[in-house]
Length: 379
Image (tube, rainbow, N blue to C red):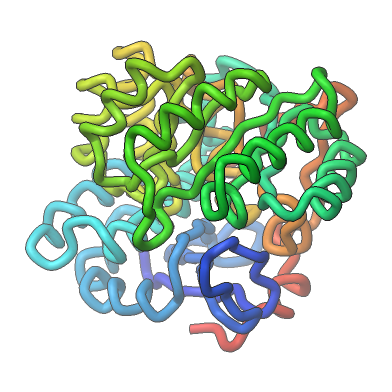
């Protein structure tokens, strides 16, 4: 079974609010689906796999101009070997960045293909089911207290038992505001809902360093916060090492890193309690699995970053099913790119848990009519 084409599908027009200093416009394209097409058929149709990339179609297409000659004609059901080959061949032109992002989508699509061909869910192919469901945390932005209360009540009404709050006023006004927001959140949801806090230290020109982070971590501990994410800029490994050592709450980061090699010092040097690779950026499921087992060997939890699409969420679910060091999965809420592009939407059970798909491949069926509302054009 050979790869005969790689297509890109931009999602645009419904991009959720990101929380950045300069907010994205609805027409901007930050997520791109990747379809790997083979020379064989299933059910009378060409057999394809679907992946997701957390970057624009323009950057994915630019990367594919480099990589298509290495992909066309390759075996379509050997994701680890093929994507590692492409990563090695792109070494001088794309070590990390957009090339690795594009490889992520290709890798996910090839795992989807392998699952469809073998009749097995991706989680089993990745090693097996350590769990058949996992706790999702609804990921939303901080806001002014009155607005924040309404947001939190809407999320808990959907059945979430964990919520992550991030960005916007937090860390950008003063300490009193930060504590007011966290106190508002805890009083609104009560003690039965986990709360995580994401400072958003990957925002450009993040102004805070270790002393702000450690004082904030101590405040968060007073409100039983589950973890403190991106408290420092993403390149400040020395600051994270010191913060993790002295913080009373677990420390997490990793969403902007790409390639397993970039994660090694963070895990080996004890910079985090929780590592957060993004499957749609880091190099796909193949790379995320390697990072996950590295984390396991160093007693570090893995929580995939998931500001994502339904395809990315499905990949994350299979990943966390196949790793013993996973307890949560991120679920951006609400998001048309998660909830409106699949034929059967994801649904929390009565305990606020998400079931892991068990159908072959990623185990989801795309709603192409829903996707068409986001398309500018299809390559």
